[in-house]
Image: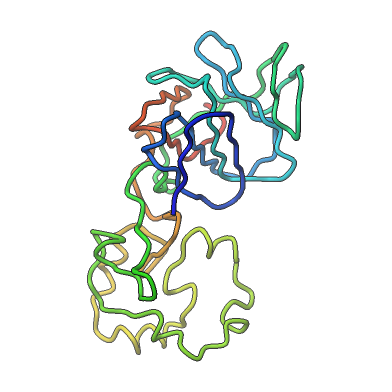
Length: 242
């Protein structure tokens, strides 16, 4: 249900997004890469001094970190790879003697890769009930679908067979779990074009992390400047800078 970071050095990486509460006392950065990576990640300030370096042993799409070195309004640069020397513990560099930059990264742009990293997070459903469409997505039409009712008695092993479980964890649509015939049966004559206009993954997007549901990108055009503020902590669609 969200985490608070109030001090220390914190890092978490993987392939699904767990929100960090904006009420945290200490600044943090959340990065979403367009493609999975397991390269060394280094974040530097405008003087080129590394403030964070982490060599995660597995591939990841999302990484969140917090350190007392992060400053409000500061612009940072993000690199993958490069040559680094320093003290390291479990992949995290606790001190850095030198760093030769690798590939400079940029964020933003490319609407196809946008996600809800920075605000607009869907809220969890009421405890024990179906998703509340109005609360989760203000732009979603009210179709009165109760997923608990639809899935009652279904064999989950059969339902999830051949499905991309990582994809389902990061956001899913009705088309991921129901056939076209079942969608027609449950939705009847609902205007499905309303869902297409939402820019999600199809009809009726859901997701604990928002998934790729056409939310606002961290920048309209690609930029290598990662300017961190308390209102702007998430950076999406990170790719090599052009």
